[in-house]
Length: 82
Image (cartoon, rainbow, N blue to C red; front, side, top):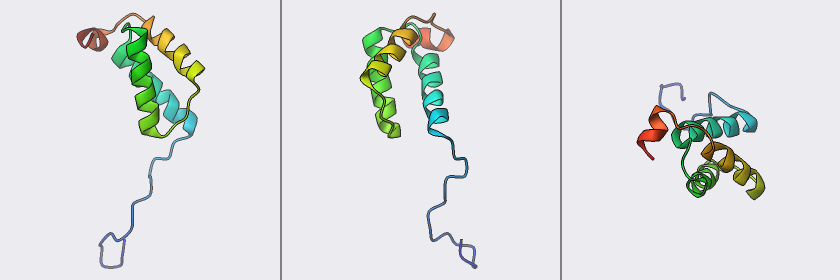
């Protein structure tokens, strides 16, 4: 901020997270949202979320996560959107 209280530059990220924390957060959210959904649907969602976040994840890792998430029991939220 300038001395007059106006913002003239971008605000820096005030809550910086490690890449591992960001990936873990994306996976936790996808687990909550898509537990028990079809593996292809989970895989598509993971690809999109990681691309949007600017993270590169190997196809093998994406498939492993999709298989695991698809195999989870749906929770109250994920079963509503199925």
